[in-house]
Image (cartoon, rainbow, N blue to C red; front, side, top):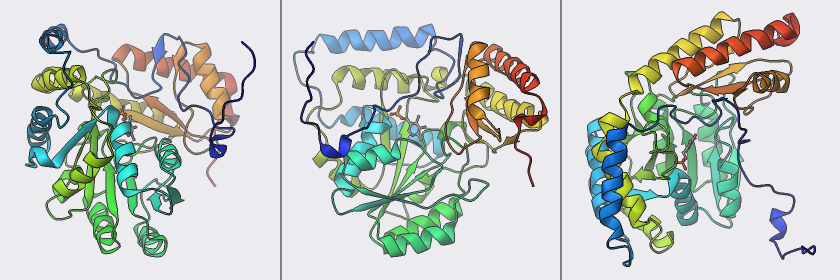
Amino acid sequence: MNPYTPPVRPDLAGEVPYGAPQLNVDVRLNVNENPFAPPESVVDAVTASVQRIMSEANRYPDRDFIDLRTDLAAYLSEESGVHLSAEQLWAANGSNEVMAHVMAAFGGPGRTALTFPPTYSMYPEYARESFTTLVNVPRRSDFTIDVPAAVTAITRDQPSIVLVASPNNPTGTAIGLADIAKLASVCLQNNAVLVVDEAYAEFRRSGVPSALELLSEYPNVIVTRTMSKAFAMAGVRLGYAAAHSSVIDALRIVRLPYHLSSVTQAVARAAIAHAGDLQADLETLREKRDALVVDLTARGLRVAPSDANFAFFGVFVDRQAIWQGLVDRGVLIRETGPEGWLRVSVGTPEENARFITALDEVLADLGQGALVVDE
Ligand SMILES: *Cc1c(COP(=O)(O)O)cnc(C)c1O
């Protein structure tokens, strides 16, 4: 082909598409997927509902997907004990698209979003795509949120959106409900929505509450969830949000018409109907996550407490060398977050064992100097 330089927006100069490397190795523990594929009974049920929907595929889907929103409300009530109506639910193609709607409705040119790094690496992209200024309030060294610093920044910078991932990615850290309530209250006084990204909520340890509990008190709270992790349906692309119905009404304005295909709606509804089967391995994954944290700690590593399906560990002098050593042994993890740290998703018991064996080999190869020594 002849060279061609299309008239791309100047602010996109030098940008590259987002995405973790998709390498073809045996053990892939790099994108926090659920390692257990949906059981055959669920595959059959989902396929049957897609078959039914296809006989009406000449028609546009239900734009407001009321049935799906009703099912999502029922699921959340079961999962968290918080009762919501369909008008308080929203869904899109992955929680990434839900966030795009939030940014489009509440961000925009001249507006500011505020977040707490190290956190989800998509947040700067959401801000860029919606022409929203992004302000960062760094987390403390234990990856918790510095609430007084957050209050100061919210008051000073007047964001219209404050974004907090809890459990956080890549650190696994869950933020206590009192801290989230404090943020919600300061946001409300300063006319901001508070988005609590709970992509990993179902993996939280027992006793760790969901921010869904704050919805009745704080009309500015938006809790986002996804079927990509605990539901073992990353390939389906279904994310959703719970919020005040006025917030949902604002999201409805900015969505593309018919953004959620009838196939996606049918698959998601069938999946919710079989949530128990899809999440049958949840308890195992939580136990294996705790075991992984113990195994890594036993190797003299620093490991962040995790309420997600991954562990964040370090601190390595040369994390790239560790990452590459693992890839050479057929294990792919994620090089992300602060310098010296790595993230590994919880896999099947066999995958976790292969990871630990490979890590031991890499650490033995590199010797004593592999770890940053604490002062
Ligand atoms: C994985 C993840 C999501 C999920 O995104 P989807 O678009 O629903 O797949 C959202 N937020 C965080 C912090 C994540 O790690």
